[in-house]
Amino acid sequence: MFWLADRIARGDLHVHFSGVCGTAMAAVAAELHRRGVRVTGSDAATYPPMSTFLAGAGVPVAEGFAAGNLEPAPNLVVVGNALSRGNPEVEAVLDRGLAYCSLPELLGWAFLPGKIPLVVTGTHGKTTTSALCAWALHRAGQDPSWLVGGVPGGLERGFRVGTGPVFVLEGDEYDTAFFDKRSKFLHYRPRVLVLNNLEYDHADIFDDLDAVRRSFRHLLRVVPGSGRVVANADDPEVAALARDAPCPVVTYGVRTRDADWVGEPGPDRVRVRGPGGRQAEVRHPLVGRHQAWNVLAAVAALDAVGLPLGAVAAAVASFRGVRRRAELRGEARGVAVYDDFAHHPTAIRGTLEGFRDRFPGRRVWALVEPRSNTMRRRVFQDALAGAFGAADRVCVRQVPDPHKVPPAERLDVGRLVRDLRARGVRADAFPDAAAIVARVAADARPGDVVVVLSNGGFEGIHGRLLDALGGAG
Image (tube, rainbow, N blue to C red; front, side, top):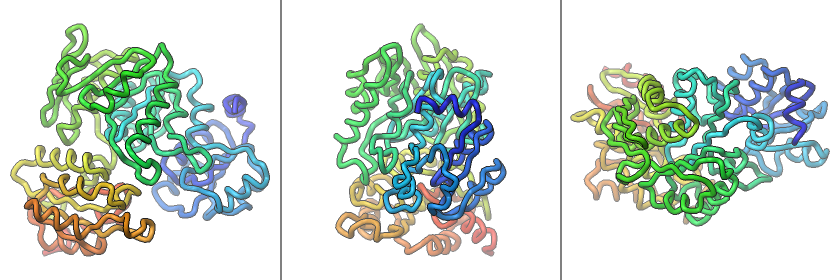
């Protein structure tokens, strides 16, 4: 792979993306095309917005996977994370001996040499924190590069290669590809590494919390001695990890008053105190007091790459958030409908408490789709029952595609609803999004706040609900 950056610079290269309609895959494919590389792609289901984005970028996309999509033979095939053995393109790549790699590996070899990778990791807050860092560097005129797992407001896309020295990357602990079961973030060569928090997640690839810890310990081993680890001192798992850091550690916290960076959170601001007596009131548009940790992480990480506190505070105040993170999708009949990616009990609790804080005296509805590989499972059965205390109404969809999880391992939605009711939460189970839309449209009243919680499309529930509310008498 040493040849890759040089061949990209010359433009005499053909790269095929198998599974090109993933958000990050599409963004990287478009960037390579912009640089003069011949780019082709394929995917099983091509639909907006990625299909229109790729068409606008000039990247041809084949519908469906087929060995013929690899003719003539590309110089390199980038294999998407969702593909596995048995896929016709995967089998053709292996049979023909074509060069192939994962997207994280491509990023590591093609875009990171010569950059300062600022890698944001953790179970929660990765997207928001990395978007904050990218936005602040952008506003400061530093022309950063970034890879963010969402679309930051004002930055138009989740991937960009700039001329500045810093490359901000959202460091996902999920596995890399069918042929590389290591975490993606191990390919990102961190020089500044943010450890935001650590909990058990991704039950489909990690057996237990020890397995997650092991992956993060491996990540620490590739941080250079001249680098920095930015660690959440309030999280005991992170504090334990940071003790093994091979470089200086900068801490931040809300509860740990002797951290290097300390924050006092309010509903829409964080009072920050840092080394050398530096202080600032950092205003932000984010929902939830838990956002204080994300703001502090960004402040500390950006300080490590030389961005002054005042510049960070000014940028954060103008930050427009990230799509699918407490994103207002519309309002109809006086009912506001928000979209949020939260799909872990801790994230759900923090998100709903944030909405309760932001909208005191208004009814908060939580519409939940247990869609992720972990949420489908019973691993969080008990924890979920304690995650909805800030909601007035909870509507839980039955587990979609239940055949993907054995019955003995599957989340019991009926039991979850019973447990919520036992805690005094008004909760009901529904077979699909249509049934939830009908209930909310019938029972919602002006002033209500509806929060949709899913890591997927939830059958287009946001638009369907707004249509139903708008059409209701």
